[in-house]
Amino acid sequence: MQNLCAHYRLPSGSGFDLDRISPRDQGPFNDSEEGERFVEGAIEEIQHLQYKLFIENKQSLLIVLQAPDAAGKDGAIRHVLGKMNPLGCRAYSFKVPSSLETSHDFLWRIHSLAPASGMVSIFNRSHYEDVLAARVENLVPESIWRRRYDHINAFESLLMDRGTRILKFYLHISPEEQLKRFGERLADPEKHWKLNIGDYTSRSKWGMYRNAYHDAFERCSPETAPWFVIPADRKWHRNAAIAGILLQTLRDMEPQLPASSVDPEEIRKYYELAQAELDGPK
Image (cartoon, rainbow, N blue to C red; front, side):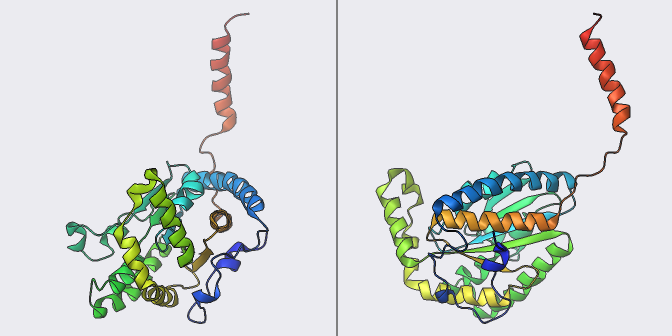
């Protein structure tokens, strides 16, 4: 499999256009069967590497998921990211800020959930909402949200200085596929809890959100914390691409199990003595 990080990574600065990236692109995968087999194998190694990351207790990983509604953030967590051991992995969903949260700076609620050493944090939406929804929905003046790009870069730089690797995924879905999935929710009573009038009214602002994403990508995609655009019309492809990038990143982090602080041969003596006591006289 080719370098998936390089395949989906956005270049730093300007010079890209989401409209030139097909939401139905399959990347290096030929079909769903190949993609699903890849995910199955990748998850097994991801689990092993995450175990080592947790035990090593020196590095950490932050995974950011941003997307239009119905693009599959929950699905990516359920089928790929959520397969990691919950002892060392936490997922957080950022809704409308509470009154307590709005009484602090916009990064206050984010920073407290950043991963500690050895941990993985998954953000379902994130601090980027404060230059996306806050901008498009006119929640704050432009003079405020424009300064937030620099604050976000400084915040992510601080996390990286502390040993946190950052993966930022944008799930790239077409408006046609989004509407199809809205229809599936409407037809399935078990998915009615997901229904939201705002999902439909925000479709009229598709272009405004697209512009906001372009600016966020241009201003906040340094070499050390790039964005990855994941074509998401095909759910199996979304999962395969994310699994591949996560696996490659964990490999690059090279977490190591710590050396034993005791002599295994010394412990073996106690083990053999205990075993002999259990066995009793023959």
